[in-house]
Image 1 (cartoon, chains in turn cyan, orange):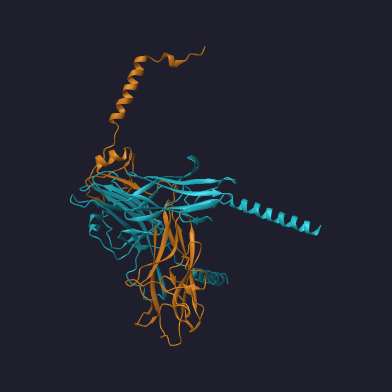
Image 2 (cartoon, chains in turn brown, cyan; image 1 turned 180 degrees about the vertical axis):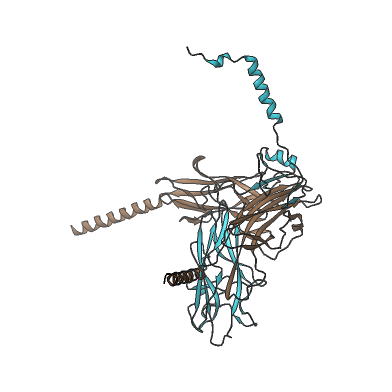
Length: 317
Length: 250
C-alpha cells in the first residue's frame, strides 16, 4: 500500500513538472560591453580591443560575429546599417581569439560571457579617412528546426566603432550649428520671432558635420539680454560622424532647452550657442523678442469690459 | 613623562628614507610582453596597451591606455582609444532580451485570426539611445512545399506596407503581420489595431520596431504577431524566422 502510494505520488509530481516545463517560454538575452569604441590611429599602426558578449539566456546559444560597415546615421546617432553591406577596409580588422572567427558560429554557455579580441591593423598606405562599423553578435541557427512550427525568433546586438585614420591627433572638422528650432508657442513675422513672457521658451538644437572626421561636441547654450547672461545650459557631449547631422541634448539627456523669462520681460533676447570640438569652435545666435503679450491682452480685455459696463450704466441712469 | 618620539628620529635617517622613496618611483614599473599566447588567444600585434595594475584571467583583458595626455599617447603609441560613454554614468552594459522565441500559432481556423505576443526589452547603459529593427527571412512557408501565407496588407481601405502601419480589423483579410505596443514603439503603431508586414531579407531593409534617443533602463515593447488564413490555404506546417537587431546609438 505504501509502495503504491509512493509510485502514485511520484508519477503525479513528474507529470506536474512536465506540464510546467512545457509551458516555460524559451527566451534570449544578450549583453555587449563596451557598446562604443572611438579610435584615432596612424597609418602603419595596430591596436587590439576586447569586447565582452554575454548570453543571459538559460540555454546554450550559438553566436556569429560580423562587422557591418556604415556611412550614415540619423539625427539621434543611430547608425543606418545594411546587414549585407561590404567595404574594402574590413580587411583591416581580425579576431585574435583562436576559436572565434568572423562569420563562424561559436558557443556561449547559459549565463556566461565570452571575450572577443578585435584587432585593427592599418596599412602604411591607408587613406586618411574615417571608417565606421557595427560589431554585430547574432544568435545563429543553421536551419530552422524541422519540428518547429510558426515563427522562430533570433536576436542580434551591436557595438559601434568610430575609427579615424589620421597622421595628427584631432584632425580638423567642420561643424555648424544648423538649426535652432523653437518648440514653444511663438509668433514669427518674417525672420523676427516673438514670444510671450508668461510662456517658458523651449527650443532644440541641431548641428551638422560637413567635414571628413567624427567629432565630439562640447559647449553651452545661453539666453542673454543686452549682453547680460540670464541663463546657461550645458550641452551633453555627443559624437557627430562625418557628413551627418545630430540633434544636441542638454546635460540631463533630454532634447529640449528651456528658459523661463521674467513675467514683465520686454525686449530683444539672444539665444547663443557655443560649441567646442577637439579642433574647431562653432557659434550661433538667434534673436527673439519677449514681451508680456498675455498680460497686455488681459489688460485690454479688462479695459474693454470696464468701458462696456460704464457705458451700460450711463445709459441706464 | 610623555616623550614625543618623532623628535628623536635622526635627520640622516629621514634623508635616506626620502631618497629611497624617490628611487622606488623610477624602478617600480611592470614589464609587458608584446607577444601573448595562450590556448585561447594568439595575439600577433606589435603593440598592446594595458592599463596599470594587474589584469590577470584565463583570457587577456585589454583596456584603454591611461596615464598620458592624449597627444602624448598618440605620439608614442600611434593611437588613442576611448571606450564607452564618459558622460552618462551607468555601470550597466547595453543589453537586449526577447521573452519568447518559439511562436507556435497552433491550428489555424480560416477567418479566425491567431495572435501571439512576446516582449522586447532594452537597457542602454551609458549609450544615448538605441533602435531595434526587425526583418524576416521569408513569409510563413510550408515546410514541405512552396506554399506561403502571404504577408498582410491589412484592411482594403488603408493598405499597410513594411514601413506604414494601418488598421487590420477585417477578418476577411488574410496574411501575417505584427503590431508593437509600448512607450518606445514605432509611432506608426497608433493603437493595437495597427499592423504591418515584416520586411523580407534580400528585398527590404530592416524596419524600426522600437527606438529611443535618451538613455533608458528596462524599456519594453510588446510585439503582437497575427496570422489569418483563408479557407483555400493549403494544410500543413508553416514556419519562418524573424531577426531583431538591437543597435545602440553613439
